[in-house]
Length: 266
Image (cartoon, rainbow, N blue to C red):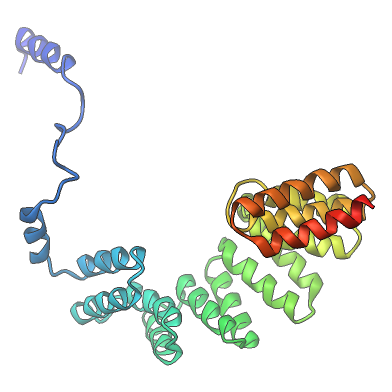
């Protein structure tokens, strides 16, 4: 408005204040008023949010129910059907999972997540041909779907198509360089081809990070060092694997590693 003096005053006052919203002291405290307001929201997306919260809490039946309620409000909500494929699979109801898949792809034929979830379902049932077809459809819909490439590689590996499996795992780690399980799978393939430097590099990538699988990954790395003639590296890595497995409460794995250590030292 051309009032430079007043503008300067407000700029000066603003500079003394921290940007952003005021701090809510009770934002993490129970708030029955906000809970009541949320209950008034009966939109499909609200039920999807409630489904996600139930799934994170481990209540798969409630999560499935919330997805169904979302569908009641919007029968063309493909994401709810996609979610139900996975949920019904984990609830051991493959028939309903299959129905959810058919509904999902009828609404959204190029849904990579729908095809991927269906592939996981069929893989868990041992139906490898159907799983392969589903993973291939997921990749066609989304070539950057690292998990679909990995799982397709697992199918190829189990059916003896090792060259195809290797290509699939290599694609998975190219898309997601931190994909530890895919690096582990590659390490196994390389080791079985006596390509020890490549196998060691892959296992080393798999060993970055700590979770329940780390002991197994370290075990594979140590065993590959031994096969490559690097005895000192093998012993130190297997000791790490044994100690890690012990700390993680994996006694069977720790005992197996210790047996290999005894053989290696003798």
